[in-house]
Image (cartoon, rainbow, N blue to C red):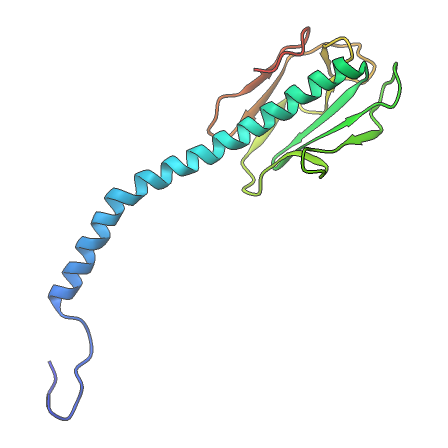
Length: 161
């Protein structure tokens, strides 16, 4: 309360105003938060879809060009490179993405992404995926993305699912 309402200005909020703000915040929380969670889940799905597409592109390119294709998967990007000749044990030429940039998939939100077993993925010209450029050891690979189903690459066929 103001001591002298005619000479001094009263400052602050009334109880009714405070209760109205609290009720409004409660309504927004009930309506808006579930929608925001759905949007965040879709963003994670989008990253998973980008990684899938990049790995499928690597497998298809290896077979169609009859060259070794190397895929590097990190938390915020998937980059591809290709050998200049066949046979080869290393990839020396970068394969640019659809936008001309180095990354075939990129994500600025840094969703935790791990390849198991760790390391580069080598897509051989015959369709297999190996743990080395020479193609000696075919090995299934799994890419875990936080909050999403894992991506599995089958060793003997290179199939990405």
